[in-house]
Length: 155
Image (cartoon, rainbow, N blue to C red):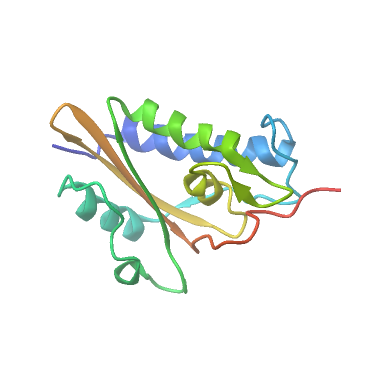
């Protein structure tokens, strides 16, 4: 069953904007304060593409070339599964512990965290689905992140 419930959408959307706000305020542990970090806008087209992905219950990134929408020249994506949607969000946030901002390097996985706090991202669309006894969440972001630092540090 594809989870399009308002509560799941709101939880995922609020999580992203809270993390971004925390980086902007400089209250996210072990990460520097951002000079700018715009609030994300919900993009229904990105959400529809995420919904198409999660309904397959296949845990892999989609073809990002198929995700380009409207005015955006790049789209990023986060994909995960866990026993609850909250566990997925917590896992993405925990990736900050593997990210060294000064060196712009990851000890382990940190690409999901970097995408969440990518300052140039303005739009997001996500979907979740119950796949067996686990939940799957896909979020699409525009514009997408690249290999640079996710934001400019505030001085």
